[in-house]
Image (tube, rainbow, N blue to C red; front, side, top):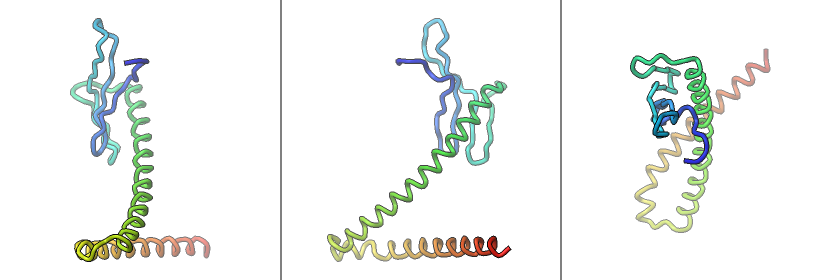
Length: 139
């Protein structure tokens, strides 16, 4: 591997990551990864692995990674929604121009229910935001 390796490696998992300290300062110059912690993004928990105490440097690096990971996941959520809008538009075009009667029969009820559910939630949330804005402006 070219270049200098980072001091920590984060093996991402569903709710966070396993944290490893990266070491190349050994006699064989092999990359060694020593697990030092498990982190949970959802509840902010950092658990040391085994009997190892975490240094302030370890904790700072882990907290920095957690903050960055939360930002990345939030950006991905929004990107996924934009992709969903694209898919809805493509689905509309498909239904209008290429779908057979049999294909429409297979998906129409499911799509209508999903879109009704989404519309209901979006309308309620929009109304809540509008009411909250009015409440702030009237005070």
